[in-house]
Image 1 (cartoon, helix red, strand yellow):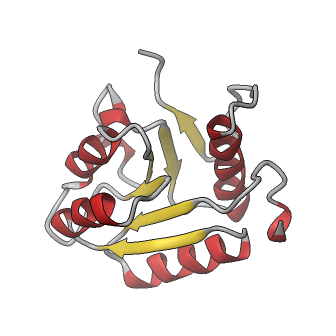
Image 2 (tube, helix red, strand yellow):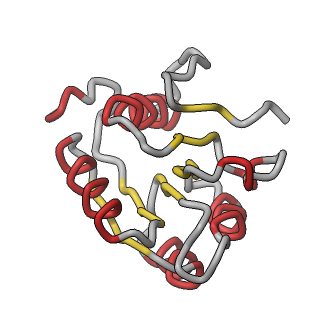
Length: 147
């Protein structure tokens, strides 16, 4: 697979929930370089939830603050209710994440590095394939607390 994404057998389908257009486009380019597919970019909560239902993403990268306010937590909760979607917060506002992480597996701190995004996607691909994995977070990522 291109980009050194050794953990993935197939491209992950990724929904980007981000209202900053340049950040969203930069992330989309990175995901493409890593061999994954961006199934949509949403800047508002309504758009994110609609795309989550229609585009069938494997992963959703969700920012906390969207064009309609700090609605990313509600988006994460809604998307994570579908067991086929792995939600990852990607935000500089981690203090707004509730204690239960709204169903997300963790948070990537902004500004993010390409390495942390690639590492988490490898981890998700391994988990989806049923491969054993360590619960070690790369720098810049924090797993949600165990329930």
